[in-house]
Amino acid sequence: MKTLLSVLCLAVLTAVGVQAASSISDIGHDELKAAIAKKAVFLVDVNGTESYNAGHIPGAIDYIANKDKFASLLPKDKSALIVAYCGNEHCTAYKKAADAAVALGYTNVKHYAPGIAGWKAKEKTEAGSVATAQAGTADCCKM
Image (tube, rainbow, N blue to C red):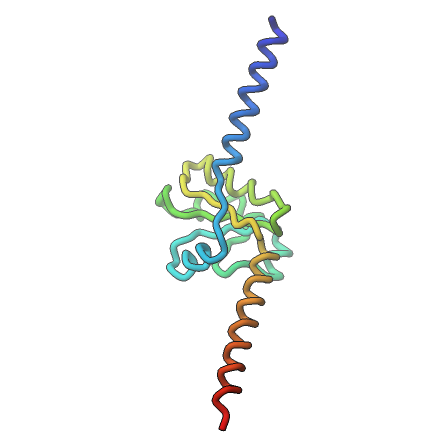
């Protein structure tokens, strides 16, 4: 009987943990850029201070440096968009900040899965595309 009860408790706790982890949905690059442009997102970099100083998504805070005062930095509106990210799609460090925000009652917490590596790659690609398009336009119009 004790064994059965232990197994049931473990199953319930596992289900709750999986549900909590899956409640943090991903946000795409274009959606994130739009939110940044509208100043409608609170960004949290969970890569560590050295990585943060080497480059971060514009407007992001350094979670590691601000962990002790994280709650005071978050928006007052509990439905505000909070986006946490770390190194890349294989990194799970973002969960520290995302879970902290959820524990504080925030209901619109998302994950930018590509992380800083994906952000930099996408921005470099987009900048290259713009430069190529501009060069193409200039070349076509020369007399």
